[in-house]
Every structure is written in C-alpha cells, then in structure tokens.
Image (tube, rainbow, N blue to C red; front, side, top):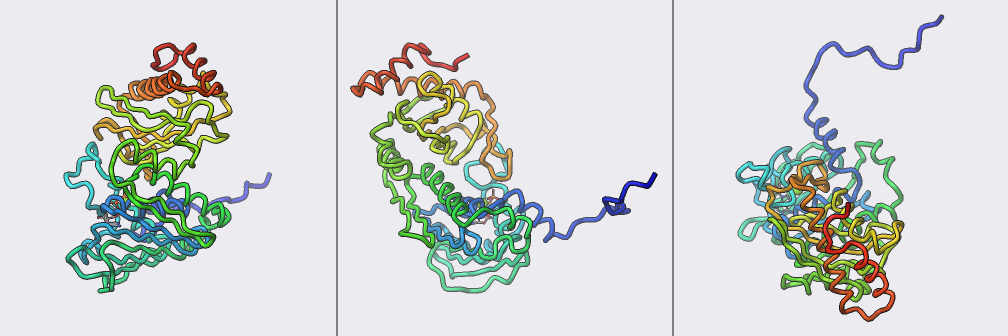
Length: 370
Ligand SMILES: Nc1ncnc2c1ncn2[C@@H]1O[C@H](COP(=O)(O)OP(=O)(O)OP(=O)(O)O)[C@@H](O)[C@H]1O
Ligand SMILES: [Mg+2]
C-alpha cells in the first residue's frame, strides 16, 4: 500500500512573531472585506470628527478609488502620525469599553485599510497647518506639509492590490457600487443632521441634504430621501420609552411591504446595525399583518445607556449583544403595535384598515408574542 501524499509542509519547529505589516494585513481581512467596508469606516471617522458634510466619491466600485472628504475637526501632524498606527485611537478617553459614545473605538480602521491599499490622508485643524501622510501596503511615509481646507480628505487607491485573494472575491463594479450606496444610506438614516454626497462615475451625485433641527419631522424628511418619496405617506411615527431604552422613528404600514428586508433600518445609539434580535422583533411585530415572504419598510432609533449594549462583538461593529434582549424585543414589538393601532384609528384607506383590523384582532395589547 502506498503512503498518502504529503498535503502540507512539515510543521515548523519554532514559534516566531509575525512581521507587523503581515499582522496588519491579516487583521485587515476582518475590517475591510470589500470597498463598502472601507467607505463605512472612513465615513464613521468623519461622523466621529463632528463633520456637518461628508462627500464620498468612488471609481470602479471603489476598487480604483475611494475618496472621503469631511469638514470635521481635522488632525495635526502628531495625531496624523499616530492615527495610522494599530490600536491608536482618540475615542476611548478613559479606556472604558462599557461607555462607548463614538462609532469607532478599536483604533484599527486606518491601519487596516492602509495595509491593503495605498491610503493618503490630508488634514487640517481649525488653527493648524495642513499635513499629509501616505501608507502604501502598510509601509508608512513621512508626515509632510500640504495645502488643505479644514477637515480631512482621504484617498484610497489600489485596494486589495497586495491581497489578490480578496480582490478575486469582489463582485462587479456595479454590485460594489450598490454596496457602497447601501452603506451610505444606512449612515444617512442614522445621522439626518449631516449632509451626505455620493459621486460615482455614472449619473449625477446622490445628495442627502442636512436636516438642521432634530426631531421626528426632520427624520421623516431624511427617510423620504433615503427610503423613497412614498414612505412618509405610508408610515406612522413610533415613540416609546421603557426601563432605560427609548425607541423613536417611523414604521411603514403593513400594506407598504417589500420583497427584501433591506429597507429595515435600525440605529442604536447613532450606529446603524444589522442585528438578528432586532430583525426578529420586527418580524414578530408584523407577523399577523404581513405575509412571511414580505418585509416592512422602517427606520427605528434606539437610545440607551452604552453600558446596556455591547458593540464590541465583531470588528465591523454592526452586531450587538444587549444585556437584556427580552426587554428590547418586547419594547420594539409593543412600540410598533401601538403605532400601527394608532394609525388604524385614523386610517381611511380600506386596504390599510383591513390589515390593521387583523392586527387589532390578533395580539391584543402588544408585548412579545409567544
Ligand atoms: N476623518 C477624520 N477626522 C479627524 N480625525 C480622524 C479622522 N479619521 C480618523 N481620525 C483619527 O484617527 C484615529 C484612528 O482612526 P481609526 O478609524 O483607525 O480608529 P478609531 O476610529 O479610533 O477606531 P475604529 O478602528 O473602531 O474605527 C481616530 O481615533 C481619530 O482620532
Ligand atoms: Mg474609525
């Protein structure tokens, strides 16, 4: 009998530390999956920097170019040099992971993006001089003076050129562009007071103008811009607070449904999230009024003490762990039921009325269904 073929090299004899550039490249795999994830990190940085206006431009679905320009606080030379180092952040001032008040906190997005691309940052603070720095496949250039307006301008080119395996998994330019657009829409729902612009090679730019005053009316205008002009006329406001959680937003009527769940927007403490618990609660809330192969359109903002929710579950920071998941689920279900019932009392549309009658006959006073 012949021996089995050798599939692997013999195991190496010694443990050794990996080269820091290789460490960055490995870690980057989790943070930067595709162009849209780089856009998400860069726009979140701009939001954390207090920007009022954020402009994103992409070419080739983000493969050839991602450019993000903000009018936030900017960085001086020392901050810029540190910002591209792994585990360097300005956002956890007291080092307390239970009090995360910003979108970023891991101190790894810039070094990760810079490990798998050519990343140039140009920045200026209100009273400082403009500075610029380039990271090329993880190799850092010097900080140089550069002309700049107040804020930060970031350009990413040659994304994944140094990691061909990742490059191969990217979809068509069109699909990558759609993913970038989707990320921006989610952030736009989360931050109505910020102006967002997306430029691609095709057509005129998408612009979400800033909604200056806070509140439900401004959110609804932003939702009309993001979810479509039909949404405001087919939605009802939600506003409910319970045991340290406040839920506000607008939910579509059961008659206003879609074939995919991508029109469900959840924002927790200003962060857009895709979370199973939250989606399950929405499904539960509409279970009696919508067929199971259809999905509602809605945007809900949940606000709570950061200590009640852990966002440090995955490097992309879009999953959560609630300390009291049952409470959150019950709040969402009853808030949606209550809003739809209130709408039913006012509704004159027969289709809507029939759906709402079914809802009323169904789950009684709300709360999580069994
Ligand atoms: N657009 C920007 N304007 C001003 N400062 C910025 C900007 N982008 C990044 N920075 C600074 O660079 C630091 C590093 O950014 P990076 O995204 O790598 O980490 P982070 O945002 O702190 O955490 P995370 O890895 O979770 O995103 C930030 O903490 C911030 O101080
Ligand atoms: Mg960040």
